[in-house]
Image (cartoon, rainbow, N blue to C red):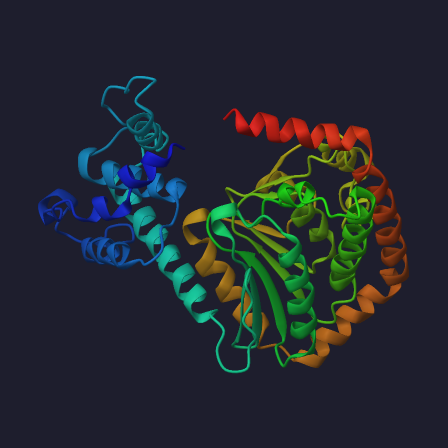
Length: 391
């Protein structure tokens, strides 16, 4: 969305509209859930948020607010803005997408959405390193209630993974495997879970040349994937938005994967002249079946969260509005289970596959190093940057 939309769609505008009179929202209070008091409290909470939740979320807030204030029932009934009026068209489309949602349902959805934003911000604040927890440049790592949370923290770059982030993730996983926590969670800051490799990694050619760069990158990638293969405790992915590339392929090495309904899963390897990694050439056919895995790994098929769940890559999908609160409630309950039983059971399950996974990891990396120095791969990456520069 155009950068101007960020300002124009600021949620702070929504809550500074006049408070809705009680007569408009039925003075009998909550007939089907959220009350008028809940709604007004949610507006105050929205105004107190410290971080911009992103345009997609702000459009949802805007649409629910409009449905609640202006539509006693039925869909959006205002004229559609012109094609070049990008901001108002985006807002109109968001409102129109609600269809015939009633005021009561819109109010409940609004309250649930704001609640999830507040919960997410609280969890990020809690995640800031304290005491003996190491501070990282590209991650926020915390341990609380028996849960170590590793949060990718480059939201302005859609949590794209740099060489620095790879090294920090390896270290963070190593520390989490040795600390006193029961469960480790990986998630993302902002609207994205992770957009995969930062392709700027490929533009920094060292003096030793591209072959040395490819070899070093292969060593780093193999160590990174091995961190998941060898991880000794239950490992849960909380996929809070779109996931791309290596952030998708390693999901087959997690014990549980929870996703918000708007998350997508995309592995555009052949599009970039590359090949699968993260043990996905083994785990994906095993999880999905060969035919479905081939669509994803060979032909770049993007999966919705529901599709990924149906194929077995995702454990469960949750509504966007309640995702954070539902998932964290569940993970906190898991963390109260006997820790040794969980760790030993996980290790027993993984033991039969560990040698196979390490062999697959090594073979995938060897092939990728070959691909990275190929003309085909370099041309594909150049084409990507050329297309990006035209946007």
